[in-house]
Length: 265
Image 1: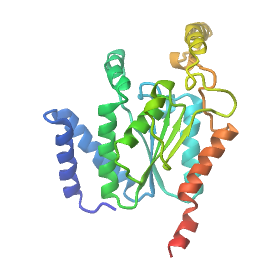
Image 2: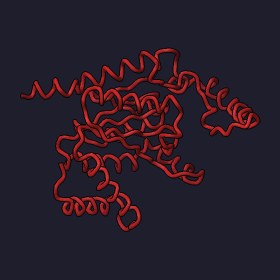
Image 3: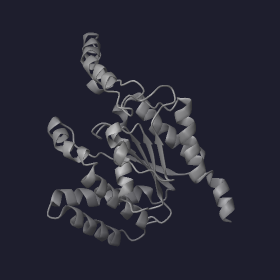
Image 4: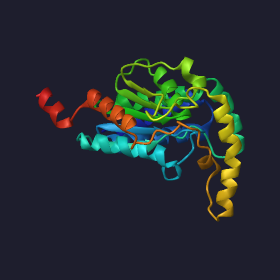
């Protein structure tokens, strides 16, 4: 548990200066974020971090139902195991087409700079909260980002990653350890994004505007991304293989808190 917040704040600002140099606004935002995370997670067993798919800016309430179900399923499983958790989302970009275009370079470089920044954040938090463990939850591009972050952690053994539907373009750069659960199929059908089924992906994107317009004509305001439903690229918690593999991963790595405490005694 963090006790000396003055020292913590000084170290947070020092790290922010090292990462962002003369950018006062980014330094202040980063240091404030570190202090907030440490405060919220100081008495918790786990920090659960959701890295959203797509551009990484979608809030929980606006997520596709299946992506939200994964986050909720992991949280519920950890609670059933007896652990106290603090949950948060990590937004790796800003809203708007200009921010998204500017983020293309990061995506093509396997999130080099942004993964390094998040890794520094996790190293800071786990260094100051001795008993805290971290579970990243990422889908699609969020899964690839989680993997990039893990590769920047230099083997930090208190950070785990659940990665669902990593796009094909990142597969060759992915590195999997015993602390990684990577699902490339939902157990019901092949993931066209993972398998790089180009014809299926193109058909899906060409049909998306038609589906979107149909909703609009019915008076339903639906986000365009909700109309891009690539076959197999959904990992709903209710799918037996998805749920069982995630629950098994969490049980093997952490087990029931009560049983763990008895073993330690």
